[in-house]
Length: 326
Image 1 (cartoon, helix red, strand yellow):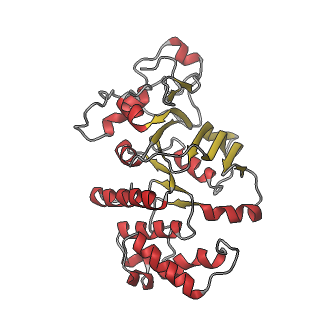
Image 2: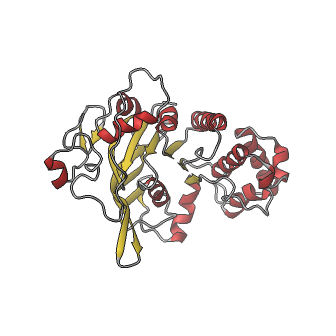
Image 3: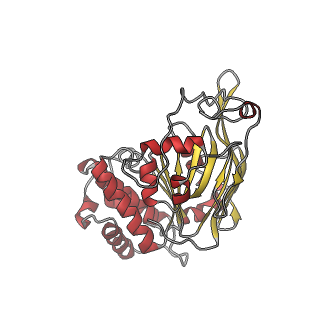
């Protein structure tokens, strides 16, 4: 899915950090100085290996987890430190779809009750409480949007397959007509055939409703299918970001080039994958200099000493954090 985004940024992230305090005075910098913007109608994919900080980043963006430092600007407003009472109305316009479709649904409640809850808690666009008739009508609309029968509203989460439960989670995220949805590994727990159905659903909804997505995944093939732009994360930091075609067809960072090995072949025009050396270093004790140098086949002395910043390498917004880009 590759639709054109407007010029107005819906979300700006400025030098964001998320640090977790650990025993023995240790720290884990899950998000380490991340900056980017997302425009209205855009789909930004965030990809990286497990533990790179992409899920922590997604939770910080929606204030589900407090950021340690930095700024999160949503619709032109700095929401980083807004009190919950002030933030609450804004939550209608930014929602999340979680990875575990079962754990995110209360097993003791019917689907209709789960979907109706945000409609009862939040007023409508005119600030009025919704009537029961309007809530019921909206529930039927949501079922139609995610291609489930209205009879599903009377059933419980355990009566559905994983793919159906994820459709229900998507419906819940859509209930209040948000502008931004953060999808955190929404298909990683599903069978491949079901993954394709859910990705197609996300794409259809984006076109139909004009949604903006931040799509978090560890599988570059998934991100390739749905994203306009891709940000590649490694040990808490974005090491490459740009237009999806540019990043995947002509990767500038050795880590991105290696990740293309995960994309099913044949895919014409993609760079040849390069094997990664060694294991991912501990995020608690990261290497000095470039955090990727311990695994990089092109490592030089400078890489051990200086941490590269993101810098533009092409006119189309393609940026890379590498001293010696490919």
